Length: 118
Image (cartoon, rainbow, N blue to C red):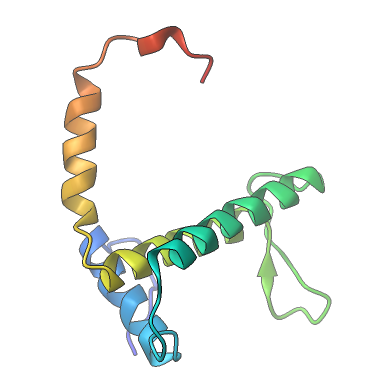
């Protein structure tokens, strides 16, 4: 199986890799519903927030008590990205085209449009 060793992967390659890895690990043995996919992506964000609430630094990666599983905000955000890429592949969502369209739209928006706080 292909491994990630550097940062020269594009969105399409990450979608293919994450979808294949999920299938290889049995996550396609039953049907994935869109609502389950959304909930599981939300779970990763919640886990990142819990790391923040435990006062872990944004860039801190640490290991569980068995010193095997990496933990921390960056790890939970990586889990989110992996799930996002996996589900885009599973549901055949063209994420790169959506990113291109949204960034193009956002580039034409006024400065701090809507005067929102963030």
